Image (cartoon, rainbow over the protein chains, first blue to last red):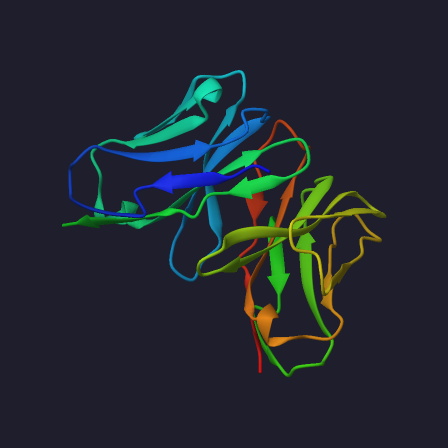
Length: 110
Length: 113
């Protein structure tokens, strides 16, 4: 059974810092991995999708990497801003299921 | 409205009542999903559908029923609501299983008294 973990559970940084969020999964037989952000009381917004054959994807200040063999993905956020404050979730898509991690709650302090 | 919508956004019901949560998407995506989100458990897949009239169980299907007579709609029914089904329910869709992003609706907050 696929299990997804995210470290750290919560993170607080001053504005302008670069930061890394981690996602680990136990079964490397995945199609892809998707990163989302969720604002309090809201739905999930897709940030980046990495296919299993890819090593990384970039969108603006966000860069996501994938090392399928080691079961790890990282989300790098450059020059963090208060508007980046949210919960960040990763989700892996396997043969018969989508499995989400518990999320990392990020606070960027002005 | 384009995208994926859910109704109602908030619902309070009583134990034993039947409740139906609606999900509608305008993209003609083949796959649709229902998740529940709970503190301590994160997001868990309840049911999904690959196309009209094709549905399959996810991780936590007990107590729920789904149908999909039209591609754009995927209602979720709690036939006899229980307090343990108090949760936030999210609907999602994607064009295919393996290659495209999954897009989420705004969620329905359900409280079962």
